[in-house]
Image 1 (cartoon, rainbow, N blue to C red):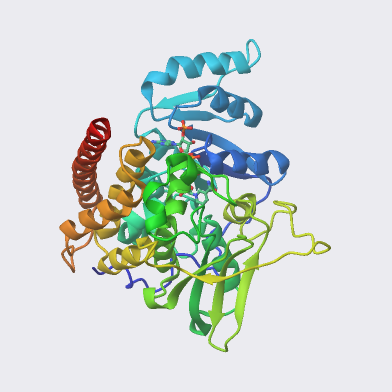
Image 2 (tube, rainbow, N blue to C red):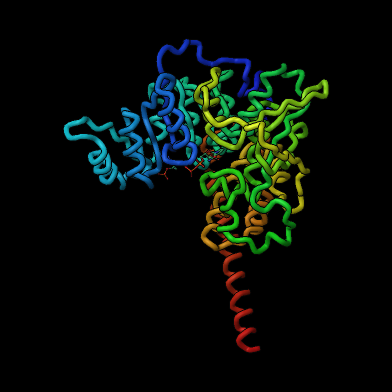
Length: 434
Ligand SMILES: NC(=O)c1ccc[n+]([C@@H]2O[C@H](COP(=O)([O-])OP(=O)(O)OC[C@H]3O[C@@H](n4cnc5c(N)ncnc54)[C@H](OP(=O)(O)O)[C@@H]3O)[C@@H](O)[C@H]2O)c1
């Protein structure tokens, strides 16, 4: 579908600075998803750099009100937002406990649109650290309101690529995903015409080196044990299936407007090199740090300046080994499928992502085997077919496609569960007979 490659300039470009107004004093930041892995690391950076950053508002789903109240008090925010209205009394209570007697409490916003409302509120930068495609509306709201968008929530770009492209001004999006922050920094070394390809690195996840057959019986606990990164559960399972890498290939295509056949994935178990850009003269520039998301988050909220000591650097007095391997596309078909849906564009990436989110939930609940995740997603994507070309995507199209994909994935996983249960029952019966 159009939109994907029609943009005159790439969405993210290190040579462009969106904000025409020089910052004097701390930069006002709104943190969406403040209680999550990205959010808490962003707050650590802000608290260590009060001269550079000030958080004006926080938003979360509402699962961790005590943490949210503590963050609000430490940062002295104006507003706290939660998606779940039922937690408002508990949040108010937690805030009262945190704040001293007689101290005014921050305003509370609640409801499914609370994060979207905050995304448009007065600030310099919105950090979108929400998990899942629910982050699309806040992404669009931040762009529309003219805020710089530090984007960790890759799902919003993936499901709503053309919508994001239509709204974003040059330089308005700064990527926070470590790979894209790495590409951003490496791309600064040349012009667009100099770029031959993007090389996205993948740790390979906890199941690197396993064959397709080996993966049949891995458990949620195995999948949640990521070797190099400590992240939220969805992205951690997505790292085990390499769906996350597939999403990142689509994200790289959308952010940097480089065709899929010029975006390569290479497995690099140490996660030291976060991605690379190969230039036309044969030179490759890599961005490297020990794995720590505070580096890319600092690029996201601090650009075009670097934040001193954002994250630890390498200790070159110690020996280290940096390895690179080609991707095993048979054991990990997700990257190929992601390229396919990225090429199809339209609603196909949204279907891929939504079906995957449902399957991850089913897997974590013990209702779907690990390999069932990609089998189910592949089937849902195939049934969705080729989205109509030439039409412009709307938010309603995305939501409709997602609703369908989730329902279809749930139907298929229910079938898988009942046949798996039946298989177990048959086996148990056979064992009992033996
Ligand atoms: N973690 C990483 O290292 C990493 C690296 C690269 C990219 N990313 C991307 O960053 C995003 C966040 O990942 P994460 O690992 O930080 O996830 P996470 O730890 O699961 O945190 C998710 C955050 O989003 C909040 N949230 C969920 N639904 C919400 C809603 N409807 N409105 C407002 N807030 C909502 C959660 O609130 P509750 O606490 O109340 O549930 C929590 O604060 C994802 O898109 C992920 O792919 C993460």
